[in-house]
Length: 138
Length: 81
Image 1 (cartoon, chains in turn yellow, blue):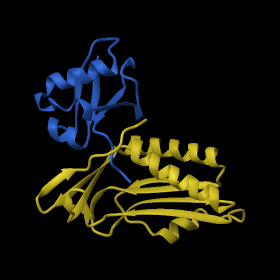
Image 2 (cartoon, chains in turn blue, purple):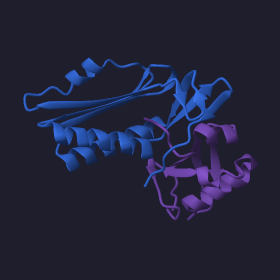
Image 3 (spheres, chains in turn blue, orange):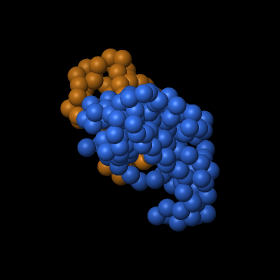
Image 4 (cartoon, helix red, strand yellow):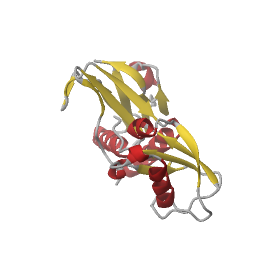
């Protein structure tokens, strides 16, 4: 239920993988490439990944969240490579019996991903390209 | 012992390499290896706070002792999501 890929994903198709009679709620977060950042106008984005470690860290976060919030399952897809404005970057989908734990788990996964999964964004702006400055592991 | 060291993102650009082999003494720690890499690449000067170390796909304490066959990675704080 963890995938690091160059390819785009279809949210409906991905959600089908979480379908189960005991699931009463599915919460999804989709991150996309925005046309502006602190640095100004963004024209496109490159994403670099350390695949083996990213998958290992994502799997650890997924297991933590399933245990911590008691949700049914969690799926994470993160893309890398060259992306354009509006392209989907990441999907976090959580299935659960009820909505509250699904929202909490989804928030937890994306927040932890931003702190400790080895993925880096490089924004291309009219004045040049730069690496996005961001989080650190706790 | 010679260890495989991978570089990512801005650290890859500073070193100009995706990976290389680095010689360290038996009993060397993750911190020792980081310093060795900094000595080997003058371009990393000033990047101290931007250098995170992972061993075999996990973040490690600076005093973690390295073993033959360990895969080390040096990279800046992450920015995915």
